[in-house]
Length: 261
Image 1 (cartoon, one colour):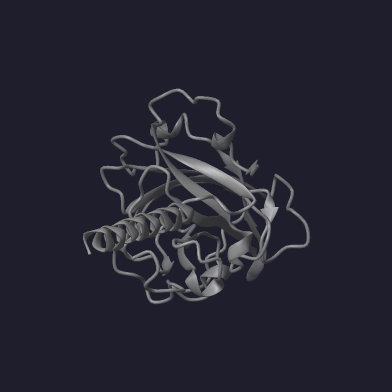
Image 2 (tube, rainbow, N blue to C red; image 1 turned 60 degrees about the vertical axis):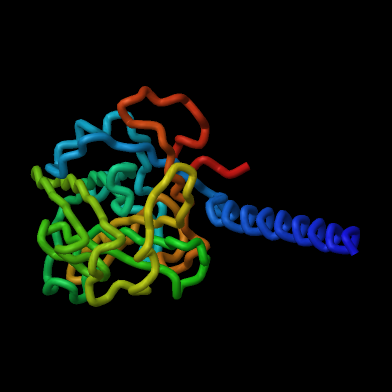
């Protein structure tokens, strides 16, 4: 009988180890980059949301040079150009930081706050927090180029931002708190509510500009081509423990748009 019980205990032990291994692999796979392009966001220390981008000097930059939902061809640089950066902090892990610089020859702002925001000049930040790769899982924040309008999931409770306008140049500095109360048109209102950035975590990201003139949207331009609500047309945003205070290490993964291998 003792030998029998020892065998049962051994089988239980093996099964327990297998279950642990399977769960570990499953959890790890959630953080594995799956899309064609990736950006690795470093930590940013002592950030002040003031529109001055001194803290962002060492952050990698992505150009907004790919068409999303609207536009037959890219506009001339004299009409529109833009770029963006992303960072995070382990001291405040529910927030994701963005710096966006836009040059646009004309500001269109004809709609009320949170109404047809895609037909006013605005920046959209869209997330697949759980890497579900389907439209139903996506959450959207939108901030108007007038420096006031919150739309989609964006609200005064979950978004800290400053927009500095100097002629035709618009500089956004933004902190999005995924855990904060959502605006009335978020997409999936519950996705990402438990989000906390950590070293090695990967989520899906698309962010882009609505370029509007003559009463309508003429272009939607981001860092990766494809439909804004197509979760497969996103990039992977991976969080890295390295600080932006440290000089770039030169890793390929730190370059916007690095092709996966």
